[in-house]
Length: 142
Image (cartoon, rainbow, N blue to C red):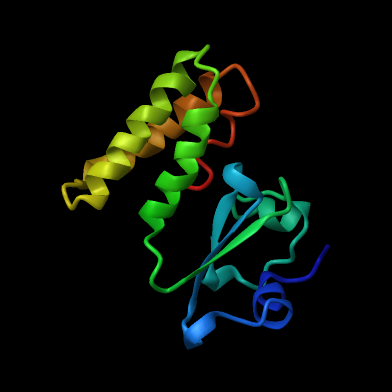
């Protein structure tokens, strides 16, 4: 607790293979958020991660290099939540599918500027309208 992401990645973890640059670190499991390399000096603790939209969660970290597509990362973690959704409440059941549809559109090169705003609105709707704790952090990796 309190060790910086930079120290964990570069000292404890040995750095990025092949001399590539750090792009981001996803912290806290599937519901965690991605912290960009520009904030790698953040201490890994509850408050430090929270200020960048991440969490301690399961304590897991996924380290991404400069070649990683962040839209693919968001889709990967959103897919987990979509599969884990019980389907009881529409914001989570429908919202996650709509978010994944927008992410797919973007990765296929068909995205529009307005898709970002739609993703943000869906994220807020899912967070505020869902019934359980699973859905609250759904948009974090996005």
